[in-house]
Image (cartoon, rainbow, N blue to C red; front, side, top):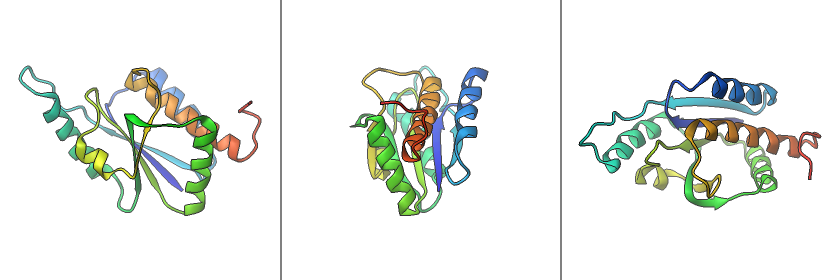
Length: 156
């Protein structure tokens, strides 16, 4: 199974790249986590947030591999516990499908991205910086996988 994380923003700091790579390295081969970076739409003085979201959204949707189930990370989305995420991950693995998780830019995801998604998740009620979202997402996917295989990483 492949999980593509399609995120707006490029040139992450080294600590972000190292953190994400560490959790990806820990995952088994049968759970392939791939990252696709979408450049931020150019911010100009007269650019409106809606225009920027649309431009980024078009690039995000073009990056979604054909046939993938899409999940949008959205502040208005469903909140999952780590145990809930582990159950979702287990169901994904049993389905045989591939999944794409969409991470918007500073202005969020476009309405088209949200419409394309089969579900929406919220990582937190807090406003999180995009670099931290990447590490948080990689760690939680790793943690969810450890729960599914009874690995001692996660403790209740």
